[in-house]
Length: 572
Ligand code: DGJ
Image (cartoon, rainbow, N blue to C red; front, side, top):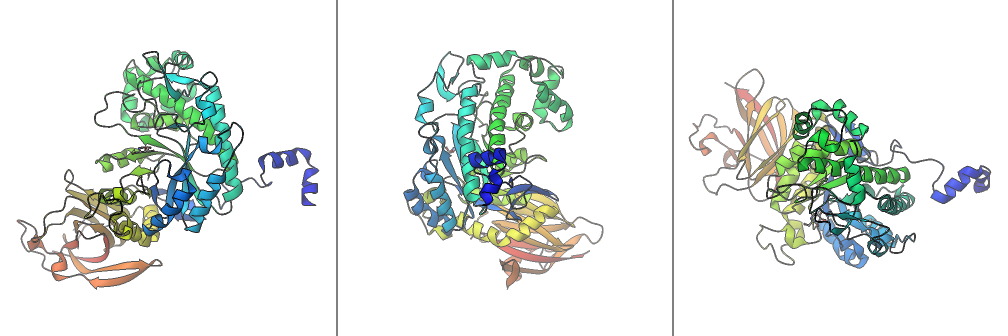
């Protein structure tokens, strides 16, 4: 009956039938849709109406192509205390024959995640996966005439779809849109899927720009006015190297790519970035018209040995061209970095920008990875952290006793599992503090042995844990949250934490009370009362006079991250 009434309006009925949508459109402003929201000092991911912290992990690329294999993975993921899993969906897996979509695999992954009480982030491996087109279906790969390839300087075509082809764009968009349409149908009520990664580490490898005929023609044309407008409007906040290139070429407001950005290969990279961004923005828009969950890109960051674009994927959203991506792909909510390099804190800082919240879809999952997670979440209000290869426990145990073996120590004891358990306890406090701007993070390694974090009425001094009995650790990390004029929660490992008053008044901080504990359903349950040898006394520190005998700071030993609550007092 209802259908008959609706179908009186022929056009609406046709639309409802072709798209399978109900009449109430789900838009980004629908209250229950997963979305990003600016909340005070942070942009947070809102899931089911509440801020969400993704304690995530990404599976190996093809793990998700077999539901049988995933059946062995889900329980491990639960044991490691993840709340979110990133899994690939290959274009080939869902459209092996042109126009015939099969989402059995997607439905199976949703069912597996739901059964284990996990959220999913799907990675759309469409036109590009690590710059290559290996996940495109055979009917695309085999028809080079219809789906043209990128070409390098040496004149050779590579087995990579060129972003300068309407046919490539339309074919990928159709498949991606069908996928998003399906997700809306099967998940709009349950919100198992909380974000989508569009493509994977895009960019051209082997040359700084594509030499396909269509690309050469585009390179000879003027820079699009939308991009030039963006540069002018956002001049003050542009990445400094991009601004320098533009200004060194005369800060022109019209001209070709080389006239605007100069004749170095950086112009090629900027040109590629704009064109990948436009391609992916078109896809993201079409996908969001079906189902508007947040979308991000991931970046293969420049490695120390790389000399020019093409050594790393030219056009990927790396810092030099992140503004180009913001201008060309405004529908992509986050440009995220994949960080395997040891200087995680530098990269987190480069990608966390006022218009780009930090999400780390790929990084390490060993003890160093835990330090990254603490730092990103604490210092850069990250919406989540995700080590790569979560189905491979041996990789996560690197650097641990019993590590690097096929089935190492108990999964629950892995550094990541212990850290995620602790971060899960603290999540309400962390999310609240991210919004209030009352949280900081520290990551110490051999290059950075101490950090001072101004927070509340004190500067929080985080340094490696010094001890007369134990060797100085080579890794330490902490999250610090100010919860009152003289009160903090600190969670970490391998560090000592002291407090320097940062407001007028007595200049020394002492410990009024320090206690370990845990959060149960958001409530703090105190444990040990920390004092004596278990806090930091000044005579522990080389050369320091023992002026503060009641304790000047907290100790976090090396046997797993713990939480302490501290109340300070001040004296002369
Ligand atoms: C980065 C890619 O984005 C991933 O898909 C995966 O291939 C890893 N590298 C492997 O380390």
